[in-house]
Amino acid sequence: MKVTIVGSGYVGLVTGACLAEVGNQVVCLDVDAQKIGILNDGGIPIHEPGLLEMVARNRAAGRIAFTTDVEQAVAHGEVQFIAVGTPPDEDGSADLRYVIAAARNIGRHMTGFKVVVDKSTVPVGTADKVRAAVDDELGKRGLAHPFTIVSNPEFLKEGAALEDFMRPDRIVLGCASDAAGERARRAMRSLYSPFQRNHDRMLFMDVRSAELTKYAANAMLATRISFMNELANLAEVLGADIELVRRGIGSDPRIGYHFLYAGCGYGGSCFPKDVQALQRSGTEAGRPSRILEAVEAANEAQKSVLVDKLVKRFGEDLTGRRFAVWGLAFKPNTDDMREAPSRVLIGQILARGGAVTAHDPVAMDEARRVMALDFADRPELLERIAYADTPEAALDGADALVIVTEWKAFRSPDFDAMQSRLSEKVIFDGRNLYDPERLAAYDLDYVPIGRPVLESAVRSAASVSSSR
Image 1 (cartoon, rainbow, N blue to C red):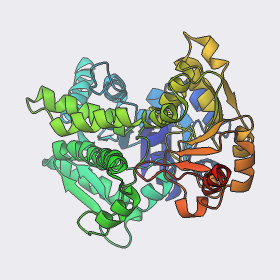
Image 2: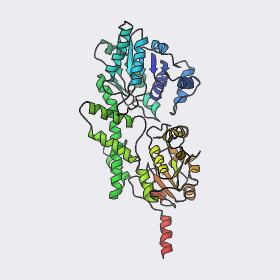
Image 3: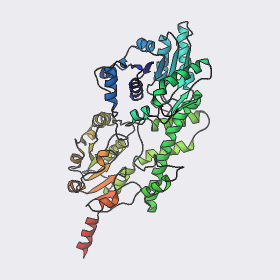
Image 4: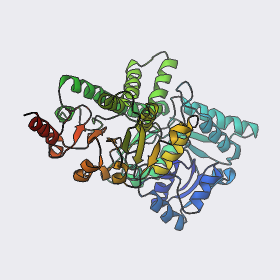
Protein backbone atom coordinates (compact mmCIF):
# COMPACT_ATOMS: atom_id res chain seq x y z
CA MET A 1 0.00 0.00 0.00
CA LYS A 2 0.97 3.63 -0.38
CA VAL A 3 1.16 5.33 3.00
CA THR A 4 1.93 8.89 4.07
CA ILE A 5 3.19 9.67 7.56
CA VAL A 6 2.73 13.30 8.61
CA GLY A 7 5.35 13.94 11.27
CA SER A 8 8.78 12.28 11.31
CA GLY A 9 9.40 12.31 15.05
CA TYR A 10 9.44 9.32 17.33
CA VAL A 11 6.02 7.82 16.53
CA GLY A 12 5.99 8.81 12.88
CA LEU A 13 9.46 7.52 12.10
CA VAL A 14 8.93 4.19 13.87
CA THR A 15 5.53 3.75 12.19
CA GLY A 16 6.91 4.61 8.76
CA ALA A 17 9.96 2.37 9.08
CA CYS A 18 7.95 -0.64 10.29
CA LEU A 19 5.31 -0.26 7.58
CA ALA A 20 8.06 -0.03 4.96
CA GLU A 21 9.76 -3.09 6.45
CA VAL A 22 6.79 -5.27 5.44
CA GLY A 23 6.68 -3.93 1.88
CA ASN A 24 4.58 -0.76 1.90
CA GLN A 25 5.59 2.37 -0.01
CA VAL A 26 5.98 5.05 2.65
CA VAL A 27 6.54 8.79 2.42
CA CYS A 28 7.37 10.59 5.68
CA LEU A 29 6.58 14.30 5.76
CA ASP A 30 7.87 16.89 8.19
CA VAL A 31 7.92 20.68 8.14
CA ASP A 32 11.29 20.63 9.93
CA ALA A 33 13.77 20.83 7.06
CA GLN A 34 16.70 20.08 9.37
CA LYS A 35 15.10 16.82 10.50
CA ILE A 36 14.35 15.76 6.92
CA GLY A 37 17.91 16.68 5.98
CA ILE A 38 19.28 14.37 8.67
CA LEU A 39 17.06 11.54 7.44
CA ASN A 40 17.99 12.06 3.80
CA ASP A 41 21.67 12.12 4.76
CA GLY A 42 21.34 8.66 6.31
CA GLY A 43 20.91 9.60 9.97
CA ILE A 44 17.98 9.66 12.34
CA PRO A 45 17.06 12.45 14.78
CA ILE A 46 16.31 10.17 17.74
CA HIS A 47 17.87 7.19 19.51
CA GLU A 48 15.91 3.96 19.27
CA PRO A 49 17.65 0.56 19.11
CA GLY A 50 17.54 -0.90 15.60
CA LEU A 51 15.75 2.06 14.01
CA LEU A 52 18.75 3.49 12.15
CA GLU A 53 19.41 0.15 10.48
CA MET A 54 15.74 -0.38 9.58
CA VAL A 55 15.41 3.08 8.04
CA ALA A 56 18.64 2.64 6.07
CA ARG A 57 17.57 -0.78 4.81
CA ASN A 58 14.20 0.41 3.55
CA ARG A 59 15.55 3.68 2.17
CA ALA A 60 18.06 1.69 0.10
CA ALA A 61 15.23 -0.54 -1.12
CA GLY A 62 13.18 2.47 -2.15
CA ARG A 63 10.34 1.72 0.24
CA ILE A 64 10.66 4.86 2.40
CA ALA A 65 11.33 8.48 1.48
CA PHE A 66 11.43 11.75 3.40
CA THR A 67 10.17 15.12 2.26
CA THR A 68 9.05 18.60 3.27
CA ASP A 69 6.78 18.79 0.20
CA VAL A 70 3.24 18.73 1.60
CA GLU A 71 1.49 18.42 -1.76
CA GLN A 72 3.67 15.49 -2.82
CA ALA A 73 3.15 13.70 0.49
CA VAL A 74 -0.64 14.13 0.51
CA ALA A 75 -0.86 12.94 -3.10
CA HIS A 76 1.13 9.80 -2.30
CA GLY A 77 -0.91 7.83 0.20
CA GLU A 78 -4.50 6.68 0.37
CA VAL A 79 -3.80 6.24 4.09
CA GLN A 80 -2.55 9.43 5.77
CA PHE A 81 -1.19 8.98 9.29
CA ILE A 82 -1.08 12.08 11.47
CA ALA A 83 1.81 11.46 13.88
CA VAL A 84 2.75 14.95 15.04
CA GLY A 85 3.46 16.09 18.59
CA THR A 86 0.76 17.00 21.09
CA PRO A 87 2.73 18.82 23.79
CA PRO A 88 0.98 19.86 27.00
CA ASP A 89 -0.48 23.34 27.03
CA GLU A 90 -0.09 25.61 30.06
CA ASP A 91 -3.32 24.26 31.59
CA GLY A 92 -2.26 20.62 31.07
CA SER A 93 -4.50 20.04 28.06
CA ALA A 94 -3.06 18.60 24.84
CA ASP A 95 -1.96 21.23 22.34
CA LEU A 96 -3.64 20.19 19.08
CA ARG A 97 -2.30 22.94 16.84
CA TYR A 98 0.02 20.58 14.94
CA VAL A 99 -2.69 17.94 14.53
CA ILE A 100 -5.13 20.48 13.13
CA ALA A 101 -2.44 21.98 10.88
CA ALA A 102 -1.74 18.50 9.49
CA ALA A 103 -5.45 17.93 8.89
CA ARG A 104 -5.74 21.25 7.08
CA ASN A 105 -2.81 20.38 4.83
CA ILE A 106 -4.47 17.12 3.91
CA GLY A 107 -7.75 18.89 3.10
CA ARG A 108 -5.89 21.57 1.17
CA HIS A 109 -4.16 19.12 -1.17
CA MET A 110 -6.21 15.89 -1.34
CA THR A 111 -7.64 14.95 -4.73
CA GLY A 112 -9.33 11.65 -3.93
CA PHE A 113 -10.50 9.38 -1.11
CA LYS A 114 -8.26 9.39 1.96
CA VAL A 115 -8.22 7.44 5.19
CA VAL A 116 -6.97 10.02 7.71
CA VAL A 117 -5.52 8.21 10.73
CA ASP A 118 -4.96 9.92 14.07
CA LYS A 119 -1.78 8.22 15.35
CA SER A 120 -0.89 11.07 17.71
CA THR A 121 -2.07 10.80 21.30
CA VAL A 122 -5.11 13.06 21.36
CA PRO A 123 -8.07 13.76 23.67
CA VAL A 124 -11.51 12.34 23.05
CA GLY A 125 -13.27 14.41 20.39
CA THR A 126 -10.15 15.22 18.38
CA ALA A 127 -11.36 13.18 15.42
CA ASP A 128 -14.33 15.54 15.13
CA LYS A 129 -11.94 18.52 15.02
CA VAL A 130 -9.78 16.81 12.41
CA ARG A 131 -12.85 16.07 10.30
CA ALA A 132 -14.00 19.70 10.57
CA ALA A 133 -10.53 20.98 9.57
CA VAL A 134 -10.40 18.76 6.48
CA ASP A 135 -13.98 19.68 5.55
CA ASP A 136 -13.20 23.38 5.97
CA GLU A 137 -10.23 23.22 3.61
CA LEU A 138 -12.20 21.22 1.06
CA GLY A 139 -15.00 23.77 1.29
CA LYS A 140 -12.58 26.58 0.51
CA ARG A 141 -11.75 24.71 -2.69
CA GLY A 142 -15.41 24.10 -3.49
CA LEU A 143 -14.85 20.35 -3.21
CA ALA A 144 -16.38 17.50 -1.24
CA HIS A 145 -13.98 14.60 -1.67
CA PRO A 146 -14.86 11.54 0.41
CA PHE A 147 -12.64 10.77 3.39
CA THR A 148 -12.94 9.16 6.80
CA ILE A 149 -11.18 9.54 10.13
CA VAL A 150 -9.67 6.60 12.03
CA SER A 151 -8.28 6.68 15.55
CA ASN A 152 -5.28 4.34 15.80
CA PRO A 153 -3.39 5.15 19.01
CA GLU A 154 0.20 4.01 19.37
CA PHE A 155 1.39 1.78 22.21
CA LEU A 156 5.15 2.01 21.71
CA LYS A 157 7.64 1.81 24.55
CA GLU A 158 10.74 3.90 24.00
CA GLY A 159 13.68 1.55 23.81
CA ALA A 160 11.53 -1.32 22.50
CA ALA A 161 9.42 0.47 19.89
CA LEU A 162 10.31 -1.70 16.90
CA GLU A 163 9.45 -4.88 18.78
CA ASP A 164 6.19 -3.34 19.98
CA PHE A 165 5.18 -2.35 16.46
CA MET A 166 6.28 -5.54 14.71
CA ARG A 167 4.77 -7.82 17.37
CA PRO A 168 1.92 -5.82 18.91
CA ASP A 169 -0.18 -6.90 21.87
CA ARG A 170 -3.18 -5.21 20.27
CA ILE A 171 -4.00 -2.86 17.40
CA VAL A 172 -6.76 -0.47 18.41
CA LEU A 173 -8.77 1.05 15.57
CA GLY A 174 -11.66 3.46 15.98
CA CYS A 175 -13.73 3.71 12.81
CA ALA A 176 -17.02 5.24 11.76
CA SER A 177 -19.99 2.94 11.20
CA ASP A 178 -20.86 4.26 7.73
CA ALA A 179 -19.72 3.08 4.29
CA ALA A 180 -16.55 5.18 4.42
CA GLY A 181 -15.78 3.67 7.81
CA GLU A 182 -16.17 0.18 6.37
CA ARG A 183 -13.79 1.10 3.58
CA ALA A 184 -11.33 2.28 6.22
CA ARG A 185 -11.69 -1.03 8.09
CA ARG A 186 -10.70 -2.93 4.98
CA ALA A 187 -7.74 -0.66 4.33
CA MET A 188 -6.46 -0.86 7.91
CA ARG A 189 -6.94 -4.60 8.09
CA SER A 190 -4.89 -4.98 4.91
CA LEU A 191 -2.21 -2.60 6.19
CA TYR A 192 -1.81 -4.37 9.53
CA SER A 193 -2.26 -7.98 8.37
CA PRO A 194 1.53 -8.67 8.29
CA PHE A 195 1.74 -7.87 12.01
CA GLN A 196 -0.82 -10.43 13.16
CA ARG A 197 0.03 -13.66 11.41
CA ASN A 198 -0.54 -15.86 14.49
CA HIS A 199 -3.87 -14.45 15.65
CA ASP A 200 -6.09 -11.42 15.18
CA ARG A 201 -4.86 -8.57 17.36
CA MET A 202 -7.12 -5.91 15.84
CA LEU A 203 -9.69 -4.34 18.12
CA PHE A 204 -12.27 -2.35 16.17
CA MET A 205 -14.39 0.13 18.10
CA ASP A 206 -15.94 3.55 17.77
CA VAL A 207 -13.61 6.51 17.38
CA ARG A 208 -14.15 8.08 20.80
CA SER A 209 -13.54 4.80 22.62
CA ALA A 210 -10.27 4.34 20.73
CA GLU A 211 -9.17 7.87 21.65
CA LEU A 212 -9.90 7.22 25.33
CA THR A 213 -8.18 3.81 25.28
CA LYS A 214 -4.74 5.36 24.77
CA TYR A 215 -5.07 7.79 27.67
CA ALA A 216 -6.60 5.11 29.88
CA ALA A 217 -3.69 2.73 29.23
CA ASN A 218 -0.99 5.25 30.08
CA ALA A 219 -2.89 6.57 33.10
CA MET A 220 -3.28 3.03 34.45
CA LEU A 221 0.44 2.32 34.12
CA ALA A 222 1.35 5.64 35.70
CA THR A 223 -1.03 4.84 38.56
CA ARG A 224 0.72 1.53 39.23
CA ILE A 225 4.11 3.27 39.35
CA SER A 226 2.95 6.00 41.73
CA PHE A 227 1.15 3.47 43.91
CA MET A 228 4.29 1.38 44.28
CA ASN A 229 6.37 4.47 45.04
CA GLU A 230 3.90 5.45 47.75
CA LEU A 231 4.13 1.93 49.18
CA ALA A 232 7.93 2.10 49.02
CA ASN A 233 7.97 5.30 51.06
CA LEU A 234 5.64 3.67 53.58
CA ALA A 235 7.79 0.52 53.68
CA GLU A 236 10.81 2.57 54.70
CA VAL A 237 8.95 4.01 57.68
CA LEU A 238 7.47 0.65 58.71
CA GLY A 239 10.70 -1.30 58.30
CA ALA A 240 9.43 -3.43 55.42
CA ASP A 241 11.17 -4.31 52.13
CA ILE A 242 9.29 -3.12 49.03
CA GLU A 243 11.05 -5.70 46.86
CA LEU A 244 9.56 -8.53 48.91
CA VAL A 245 6.19 -6.77 48.85
CA ARG A 246 6.45 -6.47 45.05
CA ARG A 247 7.02 -10.20 44.72
CA GLY A 248 4.18 -10.93 47.09
CA ILE A 249 1.58 -8.90 45.24
CA GLY A 250 2.97 -9.48 41.75
CA SER A 251 2.53 -13.23 42.12
CA ASP A 252 -1.22 -12.61 42.20
CA PRO A 253 -2.25 -13.12 38.53
CA ARG A 254 -4.91 -10.43 38.94
CA ILE A 255 -2.10 -7.93 39.59
CA GLY A 256 1.01 -9.24 37.80
CA TYR A 257 4.55 -7.89 37.95
CA HIS A 258 4.53 -5.22 35.25
CA PHE A 259 5.12 -1.62 36.32
CA LEU A 260 5.42 -2.56 40.00
CA TYR A 261 9.01 -1.41 40.50
CA ALA A 262 9.59 1.31 43.05
CA GLY A 263 11.94 4.11 42.03
CA CYS A 264 12.51 7.83 41.79
CA GLY A 265 9.54 8.66 39.58
CA TYR A 266 8.48 8.33 35.96
CA GLY A 267 9.20 10.78 33.16
CA GLY A 268 9.25 10.85 29.38
CA SER A 269 6.99 12.27 26.74
CA CYS A 270 3.92 10.13 27.45
CA PHE A 271 2.96 9.45 31.05
CA PRO A 272 3.31 12.99 32.44
CA LYS A 273 1.46 14.76 29.65
CA ASP A 274 -1.15 12.04 29.16
CA VAL A 275 -2.07 11.98 32.86
CA GLN A 276 -2.40 15.77 32.77
CA ALA A 277 -4.43 15.72 29.56
CA LEU A 278 -6.83 13.08 30.88
CA GLN A 279 -7.26 15.10 34.07
CA ARG A 280 -8.07 18.15 31.96
CA SER A 281 -10.58 16.20 29.89
CA GLY A 282 -12.29 15.00 33.05
CA THR A 283 -12.45 18.49 34.51
CA GLU A 284 -13.89 19.92 31.30
CA ALA A 285 -16.49 17.14 31.24
CA GLY A 286 -17.46 17.80 34.85
CA ARG A 287 -15.86 14.56 36.05
CA PRO A 288 -12.53 15.48 37.65
CA SER A 289 -10.30 12.56 38.58
CA ARG A 290 -9.07 12.58 42.16
CA ILE A 291 -7.03 9.45 41.46
CA LEU A 292 -5.09 11.06 38.61
CA GLU A 293 -4.47 14.18 40.67
CA ALA A 294 -2.90 11.95 43.33
CA VAL A 295 -0.88 10.02 40.74
CA GLU A 296 0.66 13.20 39.38
CA ALA A 297 1.30 14.69 42.83
CA ALA A 298 2.92 11.46 44.06
CA ASN A 299 5.19 11.32 41.03
CA GLU A 300 6.34 14.90 41.36
CA ALA A 301 7.17 14.29 45.02
CA GLN A 302 8.99 11.05 44.18
CA LYS A 303 11.40 12.87 41.88
CA SER A 304 12.81 14.55 45.01
CA VAL A 305 13.17 11.38 47.07
CA LEU A 306 16.85 10.92 46.22
CA VAL A 307 17.67 14.48 47.21
CA ASP A 308 15.84 13.92 50.49
CA LYS A 309 18.11 10.96 51.13
CA LEU A 310 21.21 12.98 50.23
CA VAL A 311 20.16 15.73 52.64
CA LYS A 312 19.51 13.21 55.39
CA ARG A 313 23.05 11.89 54.95
CA PHE A 314 25.00 15.09 54.24
CA GLY A 315 22.81 17.95 55.48
CA GLU A 316 20.92 20.71 53.69
CA ASP A 317 24.08 22.49 52.55
CA LEU A 318 25.86 20.41 49.90
CA THR A 319 28.54 22.99 49.18
CA GLY A 320 31.84 21.30 48.45
CA ARG A 321 30.18 17.96 47.75
CA ARG A 322 30.37 16.28 44.35
CA PHE A 323 28.02 13.48 43.36
CA ALA A 324 28.42 10.92 40.60
CA VAL A 325 25.11 10.51 38.74
CA TRP A 326 24.57 7.37 36.67
CA GLY A 327 21.73 7.72 34.19
CA LEU A 328 20.25 10.89 32.70
CA ALA A 329 17.57 9.70 30.25
CA PHE A 330 14.16 9.09 31.79
CA LYS A 331 14.51 5.36 31.03
CA PRO A 332 17.07 2.99 29.48
CA ASN A 333 17.60 2.57 25.72
CA THR A 334 16.63 6.13 24.86
CA ASP A 335 18.18 9.59 24.91
CA ASP A 336 14.86 11.18 25.88
CA MET A 337 15.33 13.73 28.66
CA ARG A 338 11.74 14.98 28.76
CA GLU A 339 10.47 15.11 32.36
CA ALA A 340 13.47 12.99 33.40
CA PRO A 341 13.91 12.61 37.19
CA SER A 342 17.62 13.32 36.70
CA ARG A 343 16.79 16.92 35.87
CA VAL A 344 15.05 17.42 39.21
CA LEU A 345 17.84 15.66 41.10
CA ILE A 346 20.63 17.65 39.47
CA GLY A 347 18.77 20.93 39.81
CA GLN A 348 18.24 20.42 43.54
CA ILE A 349 21.85 19.33 44.14
CA LEU A 350 23.12 22.45 42.38
CA ALA A 351 20.65 24.66 44.25
CA ARG A 352 22.11 23.35 47.53
CA GLY A 353 25.64 24.18 46.47
CA GLY A 354 26.71 20.73 45.31
CA ALA A 355 28.32 19.61 42.05
CA VAL A 356 27.63 16.70 39.72
CA THR A 357 29.61 14.45 37.41
CA ALA A 358 27.15 12.56 35.22
CA HIS A 359 27.28 9.65 32.83
CA ASP A 360 24.66 8.15 30.52
CA PRO A 361 25.36 5.61 27.76
CA VAL A 362 23.48 7.55 25.04
CA ALA A 363 21.88 10.73 26.44
CA MET A 364 24.96 12.87 27.08
CA ASP A 365 24.51 15.23 24.12
CA GLU A 366 20.81 15.64 24.78
CA ALA A 367 21.53 16.18 28.47
CA ARG A 368 23.98 18.98 27.68
CA ARG A 369 21.36 20.65 25.49
CA VAL A 370 18.56 20.27 28.04
CA MET A 371 20.66 21.35 31.02
CA ALA A 372 21.75 24.47 29.17
CA LEU A 373 18.06 25.35 28.76
CA ASP A 374 17.18 24.43 32.35
CA PHE A 375 19.85 26.74 33.75
CA ALA A 376 19.85 29.42 31.06
CA ASP A 377 19.10 32.05 33.72
CA ARG A 378 21.70 30.61 36.14
CA PRO A 379 24.77 29.92 33.94
CA GLU A 380 27.01 29.75 37.00
CA LEU A 381 25.25 26.51 37.99
CA LEU A 382 26.17 24.88 34.68
CA GLU A 383 29.81 25.20 35.64
CA ARG A 384 29.18 22.64 38.41
CA ILE A 385 27.96 19.97 35.98
CA ALA A 386 30.63 17.73 34.45
CA TYR A 387 30.13 14.78 32.11
CA ALA A 388 32.19 11.59 32.22
CA ASP A 389 32.79 9.25 29.29
CA THR A 390 32.46 6.15 31.46
CA PRO A 391 30.55 5.23 34.62
CA GLU A 392 33.83 4.62 36.41
CA ALA A 393 35.24 8.03 35.49
CA ALA A 394 32.17 9.69 36.99
CA LEU A 395 33.14 8.26 40.39
CA ASP A 396 36.51 10.02 40.54
CA GLY A 397 36.37 12.89 43.03
CA ALA A 398 32.80 12.07 44.05
CA ASP A 399 31.55 11.77 47.60
CA ALA A 400 28.74 9.38 46.64
CA LEU A 401 27.07 7.65 43.71
CA VAL A 402 23.44 8.35 42.77
CA ILE A 403 21.75 5.96 40.32
CA VAL A 404 18.79 7.44 38.43
CA THR A 405 18.32 5.28 35.30
CA GLU A 406 18.43 1.48 35.25
CA TRP A 407 20.76 0.93 32.29
CA LYS A 408 22.01 -2.64 31.97
CA ALA A 409 25.59 -1.35 31.99
CA PHE A 410 25.08 -0.28 35.62
CA ARG A 411 23.82 -3.64 36.91
CA SER A 412 27.15 -5.37 37.61
CA PRO A 413 29.76 -2.72 38.40
CA ASP A 414 33.17 -3.29 39.93
CA PHE A 415 32.31 -2.71 43.58
CA ASP A 416 35.97 -3.02 44.61
CA ALA A 417 36.87 -0.11 42.35
CA MET A 418 33.79 1.78 43.46
CA GLN A 419 34.66 1.64 47.14
CA SER A 420 38.18 2.89 46.41
CA ARG A 421 36.97 5.83 44.29
CA LEU A 422 34.11 7.17 46.42
CA SER A 423 35.24 9.28 49.36
CA GLU A 424 32.07 8.71 51.41
CA LYS A 425 31.57 5.16 50.09
CA VAL A 426 27.80 5.34 49.70
CA ILE A 427 25.41 4.41 46.89
CA PHE A 428 22.00 6.04 46.59
CA ASP A 429 20.10 3.68 44.32
CA GLY A 430 17.00 5.23 42.76
CA ARG A 431 16.14 2.03 40.88
CA ASN A 432 16.99 -0.73 43.39
CA LEU A 433 19.49 -2.36 41.04
CA TYR A 434 21.58 -4.21 43.59
CA ASP A 435 21.19 -7.08 46.00
CA PRO A 436 21.95 -5.83 49.52
CA GLU A 437 23.34 -9.25 50.47
CA ARG A 438 25.96 -8.98 47.72
CA LEU A 439 26.91 -5.47 48.80
CA ALA A 440 27.39 -6.59 52.40
CA ALA A 441 30.84 -7.84 51.48
CA TYR A 442 32.06 -4.38 50.47
CA ASP A 443 33.02 -1.23 52.30
CA LEU A 444 29.94 0.56 50.94
CA ASP A 445 26.74 1.93 52.41
CA TYR A 446 23.67 1.22 50.30
CA VAL A 447 20.59 3.46 50.32
CA PRO A 448 17.83 2.08 48.05
CA ILE A 449 14.15 3.01 47.64
CA GLY A 450 11.70 1.33 50.02
CA ARG A 451 14.27 -1.14 51.33
CA PRO A 452 16.32 -1.21 54.53
CA VAL A 453 19.49 0.88 54.36
CA LEU A 454 22.61 -1.26 54.38
CA GLU A 455 25.46 0.16 56.46
CA SER A 456 28.85 -1.22 55.56
CA ALA A 457 29.63 -4.32 57.59
CA VAL A 458 33.34 -3.57 57.12
CA ARG A 459 33.14 -0.10 58.67
CA SER A 460 30.71 -1.25 61.35
CA ALA A 461 33.11 -3.98 62.41
CA ALA A 462 36.01 -1.50 62.45
CA SER A 463 33.97 0.86 64.58
CA VAL A 464 33.19 -1.86 67.11
CA SER A 465 36.83 -2.95 67.21
CA SER A 466 38.09 0.60 67.81
CA SER A 467 35.63 1.13 70.66
CA ARG A 468 36.95 -1.83 72.64
